[in-house]
Amino acid sequence: MAEHADGPEHVDGPEHADGPHPGRGEGQDGGGTGPARRASDRGRYGRLSRERVLASALGLVDREGLSALSMRRLGAELGVEAMALYRYAEGKDALLDGLVEALHLELEERLAAGEPRTGRAELHRIAGTFHDVCLAHPRAVPLLATRMLAVPLARRPLAVLRLHERVLALLTAAGLDEERTVAVFDAYTAWLLGYVLVELGAMVDNPEETDPALRLGLHRMPPRELPLLRSAAAALADPAGQEGLAAGLDALLDRFATQGPRL
Amino acid sequence: MAEHADGPEHVDGPEHADGPHPGRGEGQDGGGTGPARRASDRGRYGRLSRERVLASALGLVDREGLSALSMRRLGAELGVEAMALYRYAEGKDALLDGLVEALHLELEERLAAGEPRTGRAELHRIAGTFHDVCLAHPRAVPLLATRMLAVPLARRPLAVLRLHERVLALLTAAGLDEERTVAVFDAYTAWLLGYVLVELGAMVDNPEETDPALRLGLHRMPPRELPLLRSAAAALADPAGQEGLAAGLDALLDRFATQGPRL
DNA sequence: TGGCGTATATATACGTCGTATACGTACACC
DNA sequence: GGTGTACGTATACGACGTATATATACGCCA
Image 1 (spheres, chains in turn blue, yellow, brown, orange):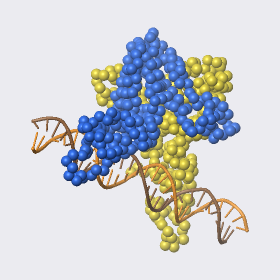
Image 2: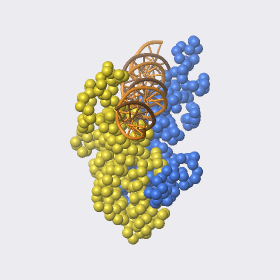
Image 3: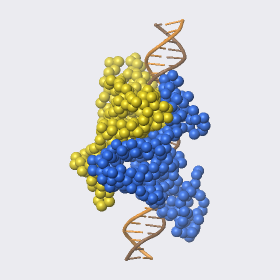
Image 4: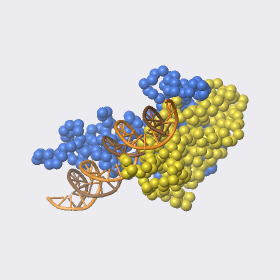
């Protein structure tokens, strides 16, 4: 179910397929002269590419969650056998890293679409845009945490490293020495990631429960203990959004970057 | 490979088994009167319990990482078939939540061992202890992020909810109104989680590489682009520790909790 | 002391997963 | 027009989570 609905159906040959099923037309098909597309002109017509694979994977995760992402399933999504994907990602883990990359590429796109600023304002713009990207792909966000812990710095996707570089450039341009730069960088990254995780965590709920008091299953909480949590739960359920992010960021920057006049 | 090497081989019967294999002695075993331990006196002798299961799971994750944790493997660790674990956790996901719980129980233990403080000092003590627990179980930390995003508030393990309650109590005791309380709570949680994730992320490396310049695989980084990252990488590799955590926390508290005199 | 209900652990089986390996097939280039 | 190579398929294997049915031992009441 759910058409993939994204690629332009552009194929280098005009033939428009013999049906929706990509699969079984096996063997010499009764002497038809038509070479009857095989092997490489597959992939729901048009060759595979890393971009197509990652885009499809991200779409699948967005629609059905991380646990729905398997090599076989993704292959099917692309009209291809699972093993075909191994040309474009070394394995499942690399594919997950690819998703992290895809998220950061989207971040770069969005940043390029807006107008750049300088110093602290640009840090805020990056943070806000990052926040937007995460909200656009909430089910992929856990990857930002898990892959971050699984992959050493230099093996992170290039787009991630470019983001790091970008932030470092802003900090050093503001006149911070290296020690300060690293301290602010860490705080910036930690706050961004933590904030997004907490915010998304608050949004997890049973979607077919409309009463906000029960959206998070409050009735399951021990009634006598946890009184504060119980009364605050509603407020915890819909979080602060961009303002909270910006406010905390300012607080941290004020604290950690006490040198550069522009920060 | 890799003996389990942990349980005391204490058995309540003196018979020393017919071999290392727990399994196959089927049916009426030829009229031996010895009841020849079966079923429930298994579990590397002594019954199973949720505590034992979780402790063993956490140990396994600590030693071999999250991907080594499977029902079968954990069962083997406990001298038991995989399905036996389903009495103590509804399934794999519940088991992972159990690990989150175990982490928080350890946190509670450590907190109980120290002397409690009040207000901001207690928030710092909790944060620092949380940090310690995470460093003690680095490979389990990703669970804090992923399960947080997977489980609605009220379904989180009780120990997690108790921690929430504890923090909320500190905030309201300091005189914050509910809105402020929730804002500070979110900021506190986000900072704690983000900081730990970033700090642990910096520690992931190839352990059999001693040259610190290469520990993170810096040689793989594009040489011309990313110059700042390259030069800062070493500093990014060993992070700030407790001081950075405390400093950021103070910054956030100063910003978000501008009411109570005790915060 | 004996018998039984219930908690406990096993045994078996199914479908899916990641992926190693071997094989086809079509395109680019001479 | 033939051929090397990049691309995708086919098949297979072992491990995984877990549903279901079964065997075993302990607590309790007589």
